[in-house]
Structure formats: C-alpha cells, structure tokens
Image (cartoon, rainbow, N blue to C red):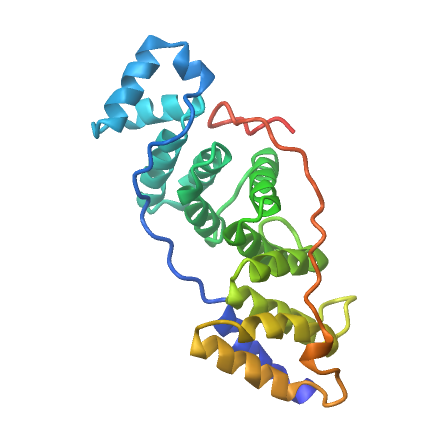
Length: 263
C-alpha cells in the first residue's frame, strides 16, 4: 500500500473539503431562559430582538449570557464577522451557548470557527465546547459527529483520538453522511500511529458510501474498493457495526463570556 500513499492522501483531502457554513437563519422557537423570564427588562429586550430590532452588542451579550440562544448566535456571528482572530474564541463560546440551548442552526458555524487557524481558546472554555459537541454527537447529529471526528483526526483543538474519531465518523455515515463514510474508510486504509492499516475494516464504510446518490462519492468508493487487497472478504460478508458512544455528562449552561460551563 506504500506506493498508493500519494493517491490516498489526495482522496483524503478531497473527502475533507467542507461546504462553507451558511449564514445564520432566523429561528425563534425555544423555551424562555429562566433568568430572562424573571426580568421584565430582559423580556422586553428579547421581544424587540424577535420583532427584528437591531440590538447593540452589549444587549445581545446580556441576553446571551442569560441563556438566550438566538441572541448568543447573533452575537457570535457579529464577532466572527469582524475578521479578527482575537475574538474568535468568544465567537466559538457564544455559538456553543446557542447550540447548547438547541439552536442547531449555529452548529455548522461553531465547527467552522473552531477549525480556523490561529484561534486560541482557554482550556476551561474548550472543555465546555467539547462537551456541547459530544452531547450533540451522542444525540445522533451527523454534523456534530463528522465535525468532531475531523478535529480528533487532526489533533486540533481537542487533541488526537483516532478510535473516537472512527466511532464518530460511523455515526455520521450511518446517518447518511457519505463523505464521512469515505473518510472512515480512508482512516482504516491508511492507519494511524499505533493503529496499522486495516483494509478489511474499510469495507463496511465503503458499503455505506456506495449508497450515496452522489456519483462522485460512488466513484471514490469504487476506486478505493478496487485498491483493496483481493483477499479481503466481499462486501456482502459485512454489516456496519453500531458505534459505541462514550457518554459524557451534559454541561451546565455558560453564564458569561469569561467563564465557561461548569463541568
């Protein structure tokens, strides 16, 4: 397989191309945070936000710190839009608040920000963000599972964990993310430090990829199948296993821009 390394690296890069995250859409459903429900001024400010009024950064942050997910997402989007890497940690923090309170539309933006070069996040805040992403993955979100798997494979910003990354890619693949299936197959074919190449283990993932309606994904899966050792069992001898998810405690909600959720 050594002579195929450049070829496989090229496929890996192709499989890791991410679709740019779309701008946040307005989503106003969700329960009213306790702190806001008890504060008439906050309730009025939230009503103005939902009515389309343009709140100041300070007002959005105030609502976000009280647990208002839409305000957190909008404040994070403003921070991200400044183009200043120094505020990306705050953007990631507030996107994670939005995701935590079930504003799922903020999840792709959170993953995008975490993948930016130069971003630095304090360990406590990073741990909180990881808990939020793991929680989403455990609930079956293919976006969270595939995004978190990519971070674990690259080793940034959460450290390297290839076995966990493979579990997460399988979750995403079984939820219909055929790009995740290709990435899972490549991980098995290429191996990793301490994990030798295992072409046989790649076949269930390629079976999932072959089910894609995308001709490009089907072609990539077929190309990889043709390069596997001929002695490997045929696809019909395999059924994709169910990923074993390692449960983590659900984090408490972040309460300020300087303090992350309490573990």
